Length: 152
Image (cartoon, rainbow, N blue to C red):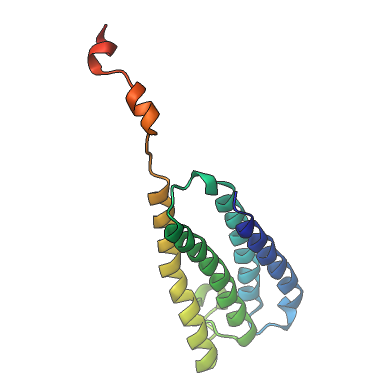
């Protein structure tokens, strides 16, 4: 278990729930709803990753990369959609924003956040898969019967 991921998960869920109160004031309320949904789902995903943390076979550097890539992708995805909803920056999210495009500065921030989410998510998922690869403990390898024993 990774309690740090649990804390971040519940904090992200709380932020997403509080943000829901502001949908009516947003320039793109549908993008605000997307931020809410992404925040809740990302929080649940962080809980799941934290729950299986002990199954990852990691060095300390790998632990750091894995944890922070999951956290960054979760927060940046939520924040990118939230900023887009508040400032009407919908160029990166044409379906949720119905084609609304905002000022250059918010559009640039949203593009950076959502673009970087692609990279950090790929790192998080790839590293998770790599760390969960099957390795037999040495004791089980020694105790495994050979093919001649299996034929008897």
